Image 1 (cartoon, rainbow, N blue to C red):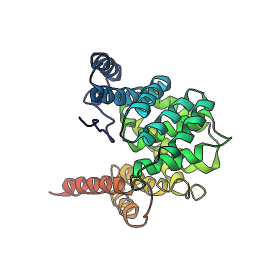
Image 2: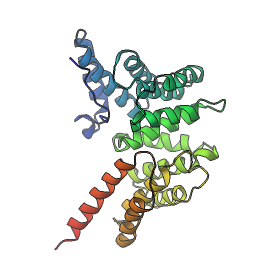
Image 3: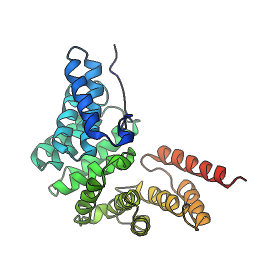
Image 4: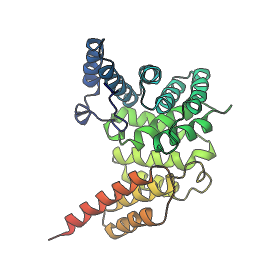
Length: 271
């Protein structure tokens, strides 16, 4: 049998009820019971890794992804990146540095956007300036891109905010503000969310290293505004995100989100 593949799996049915601890218990029990079923083990390890990231339990997360990196045939490059950022988020920067080197060595599929993203990020993080906080930022980025932030608890979202606000690296200012905007949106701090999205949209310094930040910020700002009296402005921003930017990471993902948001808006506007 082939390895079971869940490249974009990040939310089990349990997650939707925010029962992360129950999900972890269920997946851990299933992992123990599947001692002779490697494919099932890998599914469980992937979900344990994601549940642990959502809980900001970086040690358990990197251990799960480390096993996948060693055992799975699907995208060892991606698993290596997840291992490295989670390991660095525990404070083990030497270990993270070593695994970031593995990411490039395991890069195989040049047309795969996940592997390409993982390699580019690993190259940037594999520097003397690596810190625990930058690794946590990278974990939050993954949670954002895979739409897992809504499954994080309020205390964990607040913890993320504190970490991000303490980061002063100019090269990731735009990304930091995009993530702060998203977190504040889920915390229902709408005024703060709008301000952070506006700051991220105006970022030019980090545009080359974080090419998706501006179009995603434009979209996010539009999403917030369509739920206010400024509906027309929100729609305009979504169209701007779709038409004014090209060639950035996860472009297709954003276009799908924009199409869905505009379709919902058009449906709501019908008499």
